[in-house]
Image (tube, rainbow, N blue to C red; front, side, top):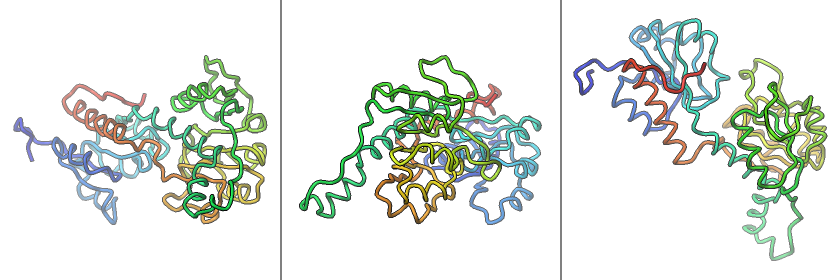
Amino acid sequence: MTSATGQAKPEIAILGQLRPPLVAALEADFVCHPVYAEADRLAYLRQHGERIRGAASHGMAGIKQAEMELMPNLEICAINGVGLETTDLDVARTRGVAITITPVLYDDVADLAIALALAACRRIAEGDRFVRRGAWLEGRMALGRKLSGMKAGLIGLGRIGSEVASRLEGFKCDIAYIDPVARDVPYRRVADAVTLAEESDILFLAAAGAAKGAGAPIVDRAILNALGPRGIFVNIARGWLVDEPAMVELLASGRLGAAGLDVFDDEPNVPEGLLALENVVLTPHIASSTEETMGAMGDTVVANLVSWFAGKGALTAVP
């Protein structure tokens, strides 16, 4: 197929399912191979991979070494997201494949972190259920907690963690953090996550980590135990970065106070033990799911690929 200029359209592989408007935008400039929909993705790439020069994916799918090896002429992969845990970044660098992300979602993720924090503190989801089942007619529901003025701990103070912290300032929170890098911020840096949890009323996980199954969880049983029976845990990072069975056990037993969770270890499967708990607020990985941000992310994916194949380089490449 050719473009409006009469030149052959570059062929790209779609490695993770993308929203229809984004696919339509890609199809305007590229010949798209929906690899994600194939029963045997690697077999498909063995047959067609030599013609493919670009790829598009999302943060949960990424791009793997096996896929890159079957696309010997691959030049670029545009990730619709910022997570790189599922992308073999070192392999991409060795093969000279540019990897791009969509760094336009930080506000939305931080907003949801605060929404989950408020929902967990003020028992908003529980209150909604309380009203709907008519329980208010029989009396008042149990008291919630006050987010304003809480001691807030952040595991990770990168782009997302920093945005969460700036919002917590508006709630007059006493903010502390752990991060491999000492940041030039007015927050207290703590030596380890257990100490941070012990000193926090609410703990946010906003850190990047290893790929699923590639390392120990960042938030383990010891950290959750340290947070304690009045502590609140919020996760807007990745589900597998938490010892999920321990978290479920502690929430169910009351040894962890409450949680606001947007991500899970085996999503869309959510542990059965979480579903009946009143002290948990659950959302289906929607941290960046607003009309505005999804549109901006899609535009960034397309712009990176168009710029690259126009010979102008990638716009938001990972260093």
